[in-house]
Image 1: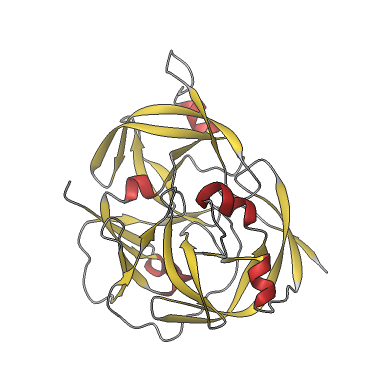
Image 2: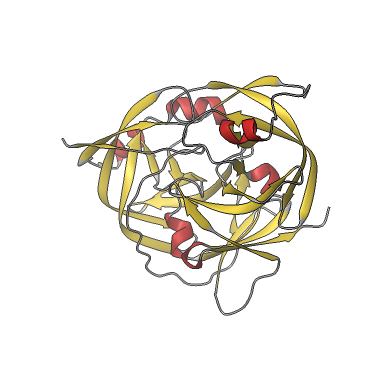
Length: 291
Protein backbone atom coordinates (compact mmCIF):
# COMPACT_ATOMS: atom_id res chain seq x y z
CA UNK A 1 0.00 0.00 0.00
CA UNK A 2 1.10 3.54 -0.66
CA UNK A 3 2.57 5.25 2.39
CA UNK A 4 1.97 8.92 3.12
CA UNK A 5 3.39 11.27 5.76
CA UNK A 6 1.02 12.36 8.51
CA UNK A 7 1.40 15.50 10.62
CA UNK A 8 0.26 15.52 14.24
CA UNK A 9 -0.36 18.35 16.71
CA UNK A 10 -0.40 18.61 20.49
CA UNK A 11 -3.80 16.95 20.56
CA UNK A 12 -4.43 13.62 18.85
CA UNK A 13 -4.17 13.77 15.06
CA UNK A 14 -3.92 16.03 12.03
CA UNK A 15 -5.05 14.70 8.67
CA UNK A 16 -6.21 16.64 5.63
CA UNK A 17 -9.43 15.64 3.94
CA UNK A 18 -12.68 17.00 2.57
CA UNK A 19 -15.70 17.38 4.84
CA UNK A 20 -19.27 17.02 3.65
CA UNK A 21 -22.34 17.41 5.87
CA UNK A 22 -25.85 16.15 5.30
CA UNK A 23 -29.05 16.60 7.29
CA UNK A 24 -27.54 19.41 9.39
CA UNK A 25 -30.51 20.83 11.26
CA UNK A 26 -30.83 22.74 14.51
CA UNK A 27 -31.84 20.42 17.34
CA UNK A 28 -32.22 20.29 21.11
CA UNK A 29 -29.27 19.93 23.43
CA UNK A 30 -27.35 16.66 23.42
CA UNK A 31 -25.58 15.29 26.52
CA UNK A 32 -21.90 16.11 26.87
CA UNK A 33 -20.06 14.10 29.51
CA UNK A 34 -16.69 14.89 31.08
CA UNK A 35 -14.51 11.84 31.55
CA UNK A 36 -11.59 11.17 33.82
CA UNK A 37 -8.86 13.55 32.72
CA UNK A 38 -11.36 16.26 31.68
CA UNK A 39 -11.99 14.89 28.20
CA UNK A 40 -15.35 15.50 26.50
CA UNK A 41 -17.47 12.62 25.25
CA UNK A 42 -20.64 12.50 23.13
CA UNK A 43 -22.79 9.85 21.48
CA UNK A 44 -21.79 9.23 17.86
CA UNK A 45 -22.02 6.58 15.17
CA UNK A 46 -19.69 5.01 12.60
CA UNK A 47 -21.51 3.59 9.57
CA UNK A 48 -24.66 3.58 11.68
CA UNK A 49 -23.09 1.71 14.62
CA UNK A 50 -23.48 3.66 17.89
CA UNK A 51 -20.36 4.49 19.88
CA UNK A 52 -19.24 6.84 22.64
CA UNK A 53 -16.61 9.18 21.20
CA UNK A 54 -14.14 11.65 22.64
CA UNK A 55 -14.70 15.09 21.10
CA UNK A 56 -11.51 16.71 19.79
CA UNK A 57 -11.61 20.01 17.88
CA UNK A 58 -7.85 19.79 17.17
CA UNK A 59 -7.97 16.38 15.49
CA UNK A 60 -8.18 16.96 11.76
CA UNK A 61 -9.71 13.53 11.21
CA UNK A 62 -11.66 11.03 13.27
CA UNK A 63 -9.65 8.17 14.76
CA UNK A 64 -11.13 4.69 15.07
CA UNK A 65 -9.51 2.01 17.23
CA UNK A 66 -8.23 -0.97 15.24
CA UNK A 67 -10.32 -3.53 17.15
CA UNK A 68 -13.49 -1.48 16.74
CA UNK A 69 -12.72 -0.91 13.05
CA UNK A 70 -12.36 -4.67 12.57
CA UNK A 71 -15.78 -5.23 14.13
CA UNK A 72 -17.24 -2.72 11.64
CA UNK A 73 -15.29 -4.28 8.75
CA UNK A 74 -13.56 -0.99 7.97
CA UNK A 75 -10.74 -1.54 5.46
CA UNK A 76 -7.76 0.78 5.07
CA UNK A 77 -6.75 1.80 1.57
CA UNK A 78 -3.34 3.24 2.50
CA UNK A 79 -0.97 3.58 5.44
CA UNK A 80 0.35 6.72 7.07
CA UNK A 81 3.44 7.34 9.19
CA UNK A 82 2.86 9.79 12.01
CA UNK A 83 4.35 11.37 15.11
CA UNK A 84 2.04 11.82 18.08
CA UNK A 85 2.17 14.17 21.04
CA UNK A 86 4.06 11.48 22.96
CA UNK A 87 7.57 10.17 22.42
CA UNK A 88 6.96 7.53 19.76
CA UNK A 89 5.93 7.36 16.11
CA UNK A 90 3.36 4.96 14.70
CA UNK A 91 1.59 3.86 11.52
CA UNK A 92 -2.11 4.08 10.86
CA UNK A 93 -4.42 3.05 8.06
CA UNK A 94 -6.87 5.29 6.23
CA UNK A 95 -10.41 4.09 5.52
CA UNK A 96 -12.48 5.96 2.93
CA UNK A 97 -16.21 6.25 2.37
CA UNK A 98 -17.11 6.15 6.08
CA UNK A 99 -20.32 7.70 7.41
CA UNK A 100 -20.00 9.65 10.66
CA UNK A 101 -22.97 10.65 12.78
CA UNK A 102 -23.34 12.86 15.86
CA UNK A 103 -25.60 15.63 17.24
CA UNK A 104 -28.27 14.87 14.65
CA UNK A 105 -25.77 15.35 11.82
CA UNK A 106 -24.87 12.78 9.18
CA UNK A 107 -21.52 13.18 7.43
CA UNK A 108 -21.16 10.75 4.52
CA UNK A 109 -18.05 9.73 2.58
CA UNK A 110 -15.48 10.62 5.24
CA UNK A 111 -11.89 9.41 5.55
CA UNK A 112 -11.01 8.14 9.03
CA UNK A 113 -7.75 6.99 10.55
CA UNK A 114 -7.53 3.46 11.97
CA UNK A 115 -5.07 3.36 14.83
CA UNK A 116 -4.40 1.47 18.05
CA UNK A 117 -6.06 3.57 20.79
CA UNK A 118 -5.57 1.02 23.59
CA UNK A 119 -2.59 2.81 25.17
CA UNK A 120 -4.29 6.22 25.04
CA UNK A 121 -7.48 4.77 26.48
CA UNK A 122 -5.75 3.11 29.42
CA UNK A 123 -3.47 6.04 30.24
CA UNK A 124 -6.00 8.84 29.90
CA UNK A 125 -9.28 7.13 30.78
CA UNK A 126 -8.38 3.82 32.42
CA UNK A 127 -10.83 2.21 29.99
CA UNK A 128 -11.28 1.15 26.38
CA UNK A 129 -11.43 3.94 23.82
CA UNK A 130 -13.10 3.24 20.46
CA UNK A 131 -13.36 6.61 18.69
CA UNK A 132 -11.94 10.13 18.81
CA UNK A 133 -14.33 12.34 16.85
CA UNK A 134 -12.34 15.01 15.04
CA UNK A 135 -13.00 18.39 13.52
CA UNK A 136 -15.36 17.09 10.82
CA UNK A 137 -18.29 17.76 13.17
CA UNK A 138 -17.04 21.31 13.81
CA UNK A 139 -16.64 21.96 10.09
CA UNK A 140 -20.17 20.70 9.42
CA UNK A 141 -22.21 23.02 11.65
CA UNK A 142 -22.22 25.86 14.16
CA UNK A 143 -22.11 24.34 17.64
CA UNK A 144 -22.97 25.72 21.07
CA UNK A 145 -21.00 24.00 23.84
CA UNK A 146 -21.40 24.49 27.58
CA UNK A 147 -18.90 22.17 29.21
CA UNK A 148 -19.89 22.59 32.86
CA UNK A 149 -23.59 22.37 31.96
CA UNK A 150 -22.79 19.07 30.17
CA UNK A 151 -24.58 19.96 26.94
CA UNK A 152 -23.88 20.60 23.26
CA UNK A 153 -26.20 21.80 20.51
CA UNK A 154 -26.28 22.48 16.78
CA UNK A 155 -27.41 26.09 16.35
CA UNK A 156 -28.47 28.18 13.39
CA UNK A 157 -26.41 30.98 11.89
CA UNK A 158 -29.19 33.56 11.74
CA UNK A 159 -28.11 35.57 14.77
CA UNK A 160 -24.93 36.72 16.49
CA UNK A 161 -24.00 34.44 19.39
CA UNK A 162 -23.36 35.81 22.87
CA UNK A 163 -19.80 36.46 23.95
CA UNK A 164 -16.56 37.82 22.54
CA UNK A 165 -16.02 36.97 18.89
CA UNK A 166 -12.53 35.64 18.12
CA UNK A 167 -11.21 35.03 14.63
CA UNK A 168 -10.10 31.49 13.92
CA UNK A 169 -6.90 31.16 11.92
CA UNK A 170 -5.75 27.76 10.70
CA UNK A 171 -2.13 26.95 11.55
CA UNK A 172 -0.61 23.54 10.79
CA UNK A 173 -4.11 22.15 10.21
CA UNK A 174 -5.65 23.27 13.54
CA UNK A 175 -7.72 26.30 14.48
CA UNK A 176 -6.13 29.00 16.66
CA UNK A 177 -7.42 31.97 18.66
CA UNK A 178 -5.58 35.02 20.03
CA UNK A 179 -4.40 35.00 23.67
CA UNK A 180 -1.97 37.02 25.77
CA UNK A 181 0.59 35.43 28.07
CA UNK A 182 1.80 37.50 31.02
CA UNK A 183 0.74 40.78 29.41
CA UNK A 184 2.67 40.25 26.20
CA UNK A 185 1.61 40.79 22.62
CA UNK A 186 -1.22 38.57 21.31
CA UNK A 187 -0.11 35.13 20.12
CA UNK A 188 -2.05 32.29 18.51
CA UNK A 189 -3.30 29.46 20.71
CA UNK A 190 -4.63 26.14 19.45
CA UNK A 191 -8.34 25.81 20.24
CA UNK A 192 -8.20 22.27 21.57
CA UNK A 193 -11.25 20.67 23.16
CA UNK A 194 -9.32 17.39 23.07
CA UNK A 195 -6.80 18.74 25.59
CA UNK A 196 -8.00 17.84 29.08
CA UNK A 197 -4.78 18.63 30.92
CA UNK A 198 -2.55 21.68 31.27
CA UNK A 199 -2.30 24.66 29.00
CA UNK A 200 0.55 23.81 26.62
CA UNK A 201 3.38 26.20 25.75
CA UNK A 202 5.61 25.49 22.75
CA UNK A 203 9.26 25.20 23.74
CA UNK A 204 10.36 27.91 21.29
CA UNK A 205 7.79 30.34 22.71
CA UNK A 206 8.82 29.38 26.25
CA UNK A 207 12.40 30.29 25.39
CA UNK A 208 11.34 33.66 23.95
CA UNK A 209 9.49 34.44 27.19
CA UNK A 210 12.30 33.02 29.37
CA UNK A 211 9.74 30.84 31.15
CA UNK A 212 12.37 28.30 32.22
CA UNK A 213 14.87 30.83 33.56
CA UNK A 214 15.08 33.76 35.99
CA UNK A 215 14.35 31.62 39.02
CA UNK A 216 10.87 30.47 38.00
CA UNK A 217 9.93 27.17 39.65
CA UNK A 218 9.94 24.25 37.20
CA UNK A 219 8.52 20.79 37.96
CA UNK A 220 7.82 17.78 35.74
CA UNK A 221 4.68 15.82 34.89
CA UNK A 222 3.83 12.91 32.59
CA UNK A 223 1.70 13.76 29.56
CA UNK A 224 1.23 12.91 25.90
CA UNK A 225 -1.44 11.30 23.73
CA UNK A 226 -0.76 9.15 20.68
CA UNK A 227 2.81 7.96 20.51
CA UNK A 228 3.06 7.19 24.21
CA UNK A 229 3.72 9.03 27.44
CA UNK A 230 6.26 11.84 27.68
CA UNK A 231 7.69 13.80 30.58
CA UNK A 232 7.03 17.55 30.35
CA UNK A 233 8.33 20.51 32.31
CA UNK A 234 5.63 22.41 34.20
CA UNK A 235 5.71 26.14 34.94
CA UNK A 236 3.16 28.60 36.34
CA UNK A 237 2.06 31.46 34.10
CA UNK A 238 1.39 34.62 36.05
CA UNK A 239 -1.47 35.55 33.74
CA UNK A 240 -3.22 34.19 30.64
CA UNK A 241 -5.80 36.39 28.91
CA UNK A 242 -8.48 34.75 26.75
CA UNK A 243 -11.42 36.66 25.25
CA UNK A 244 -10.99 39.52 27.70
CA UNK A 245 -10.85 37.30 30.78
CA UNK A 246 -7.61 37.08 32.73
CA UNK A 247 -6.64 33.82 34.44
CA UNK A 248 -3.92 33.95 37.09
CA UNK A 249 -1.38 31.37 38.28
CA UNK A 250 -2.06 29.05 35.34
CA UNK A 251 -0.23 25.72 35.30
CA UNK A 252 1.35 25.16 31.87
CA UNK A 253 3.30 22.27 30.37
CA UNK A 254 6.16 22.82 27.92
CA UNK A 255 5.49 21.03 24.62
CA UNK A 256 8.78 20.08 22.96
CA UNK A 257 7.23 18.81 19.72
CA UNK A 258 8.57 20.70 16.66
CA UNK A 259 4.99 21.23 15.43
CA UNK A 260 3.79 22.73 18.74
CA UNK A 261 1.93 26.01 18.56
CA UNK A 262 2.97 28.88 20.85
CA UNK A 263 0.03 28.10 23.16
CA UNK A 264 -2.63 25.40 23.37
CA UNK A 265 -5.77 25.98 25.46
CA UNK A 266 -8.08 23.11 26.32
CA UNK A 267 -10.96 22.13 28.54
CA UNK A 268 -9.48 23.51 31.77
CA UNK A 269 -9.60 27.04 30.32
CA UNK A 270 -12.53 26.75 27.90
CA UNK A 271 -14.91 25.34 30.53
CA UNK A 272 -15.09 28.85 31.99
CA UNK A 273 -16.96 30.00 28.87
CA UNK A 274 -20.14 29.17 27.01
CA UNK A 275 -18.69 28.42 23.58
CA UNK A 276 -20.11 28.86 20.09
CA UNK A 277 -17.95 27.50 17.28
CA UNK A 278 -18.31 28.28 13.59
CA UNK A 279 -15.31 26.73 11.85
CA UNK A 280 -16.82 27.22 8.40
CA UNK A 281 -16.87 31.00 8.96
CA UNK A 282 -13.60 31.09 10.91
CA UNK A 283 -15.01 32.31 14.22
CA UNK A 284 -15.61 31.28 17.79
CA UNK A 285 -17.55 33.15 20.47
CA UNK A 286 -16.63 32.85 24.14
CA UNK A 287 -19.14 34.08 26.74
CA UNK A 288 -17.84 34.00 30.34
CA UNK A 289 -19.83 31.69 32.59
CA UNK A 290 -20.82 32.89 36.02
CA UNK A 291 -18.48 31.61 38.76
